[in-house]
Image (cartoon, rainbow, N blue to C red; front, side, top):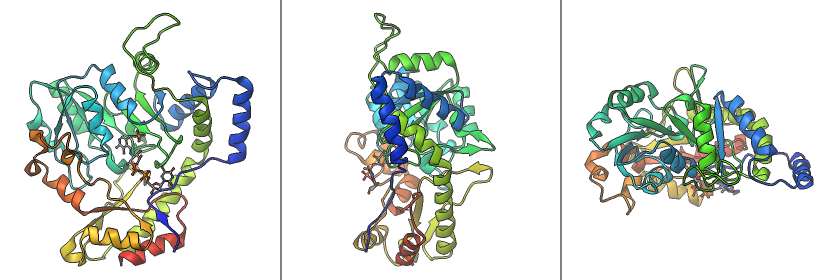
Length: 366
Ligand code: T4K
C-alpha cells in the first residue's frame, strides 16, 4: 500500500518557477532584499490583511528576533503544547520559560491560568495558535495590559487564519509565521514576522541583516536571518495556490469529521464560529478505555499500514531535558497538556490527499 504522510508540500508550477529563476539569473541579484523579496513581502501583507511583513529564512529566527526587538528579559509565560522551537527561542535569549496549562477546548494556553504564573520578573506572554486555532486574544491582551506585559504570538500554524474577517496576526505586539515545507503555505524553509508599524518593521529589517542601517552603520547587534530571491520567487507562486489548497484541506476535514463523529473513544475539534480556519492539522484524541486501544497502539498500527500520522505534540516541551527541571514543568502543573500530548494523533492532512487516501485512513481507525 502506498505511503500516506501527515503532510505534503504545496509545490509551485515548475515551468513558472523556472521562468522566474531565469529572470533571477539574468539580474544576478540573489539575496539581500532583492526584487522578489520585496514583492513577496508586499503580496503577503495584502493576502494576510496585515500592515507589515518582514520575511525570514525560517520560522524560528522570527521568534528569537522578536524577543530581541522588544528587549524581553526575565520570565516569559508560554505553552508547553507546541513545537520545541517556541520555547527554544526563549532559551536562546537567556529567558526563563514559565509553562502554563492549556485549554482542552482549543489546545491553546488557558487564559484563566496565566495570572497565577505572573511574577515580578515576567515581561511577556508567548502564546501559540496551535494547529492554527486562534487563542483567546482579547483575554490575553487584557491580562497583558493589566500587568504591562508584551505579547508575541507564535502563529507558525496560523497562516491565513481570520476571526470575524480580521487576521489573527494582528493580535499582540508581533506574530511569527513559519513557511516550512510541512506548512499550509511554504517557501521550502522560510518564515516571517508580522508587526503593526513602520518603525518596528524597520528595526526588524535591521536586526535580520546584522543590524546594518547603511553601508557602514550598525545600529544593533543583529543576526543574519534573511530570505533569498529564489525562495521569495517560489513563495510568490505558492501564494497563488494557497486558497485552493486550504479548500482541499477543508473538504478533507469535513469528511474526517463526518466519518469519525460517533466513533467511540475518538474526539476532535470542530470549527469555531466566525473563524476562517486553515486546516493545517487534523488532530484526533484517543480515549483508550472507550476506543479499546491506546493512542500508541493505534499510531503504530497506522504505521504498519503505511499511514504516517504524527503525535504532534508529544512529548510536551516541558518534558525535554533542557526544560524538565523548571518548577513550571512539573506534571501536576500541566494536567490538560499531558492528557492531550498522551492521546493525540494528527491524521494525514494536506491539499493532495485523494478521496481514497482519506477513506483508507478512516477505515483503519474504524
Ligand atoms: N513554532 C511552531 C508552533 C512550529 O510548529 C514550528 C515548526 C516552528 C515554530 C518553527 O518553524 P521552522 O523554523 O521549522 O520554520 C516539522 C517541521 O520541520 C517544523 O517546521 C514544524 N514546526 C513541525 C511541527 O514539524 P518534523 O520533524 O515533524 O518534519 P518531518 O521532516 O518529519 O516531516 C513530516 C512529514 O512531512 C514527512 O513524513 C513527510 C512530509 N514532508 C516533509 C518534508 C520536510 C514532505 O513530504 N516533504 C518534505 O520536504 O518537523
